Length: 212
Image (tube, rainbow, N blue to C red; front, side, top):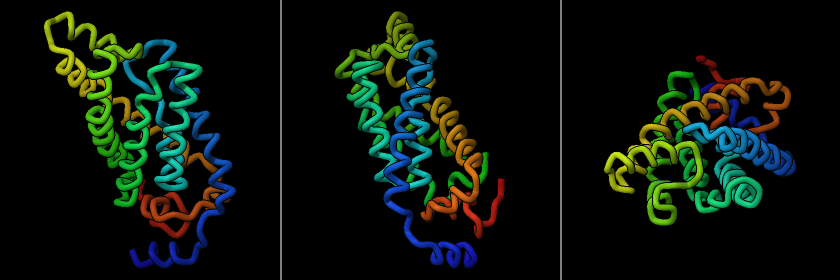
C-alpha cells in the first residue's frame, strides 16, 4: 500500500485533452456493441462497456458523459427508448467509480462479484422506468422474458423485476470482464498517461502490485 501511494503521488493529473479524445471512443464502443446485441434480440444488453472502461481510465465524470451521450445518440439511430435509461448509465458509472476505488477490478474473481452487484444496481434503477413508461416492453431481447412472465400471470412490476434479476447480473458481469480485458490490452506506454487512483488500486499501472 505504501508503494502504491508513493507511485500515485509521483504522477501528474491526466491531460484533459487525452480524456476528451477518449470520450468518442467510449461512446462508439457502447453504440456498436449495444446495437449488435439489440439487432439479434439477445436477452442481454452489452451497451455499457464503454462507460465502464472510460470510468476506469478517466473517472466518474467522463464515464457519465460517455453513458448519457451514447444513449441519447442511440435513441436517435438505434432504439428510441434508450434516452429514458440515461440515468441507468449514470448509475453504472457512479457504481464503477466507487467500486474501482476499493480495488474491485483487481482480480477476475472480484470483477465477477462487482459485475453481479452492478447488475443488481442497474436492474433496480431501470425497473421503475420500464414499468411506468413502457409497461415492461422496451423492444430489447430481455423484453421477451418480460412477455413470457406476463403471459404466465405475473404483474408488470413482478415481470420486470424478475427479468432484470435474470438478465442484468449476467449482462453486467460480461461487460465488466470485457472492459477489464480491453483495459489490459492497452499498451502500457499509453496506459501510463492516465493517472487516477482506480488504475493504481486495481493494478493497471506500473508501481502497483498486480494480482490477476
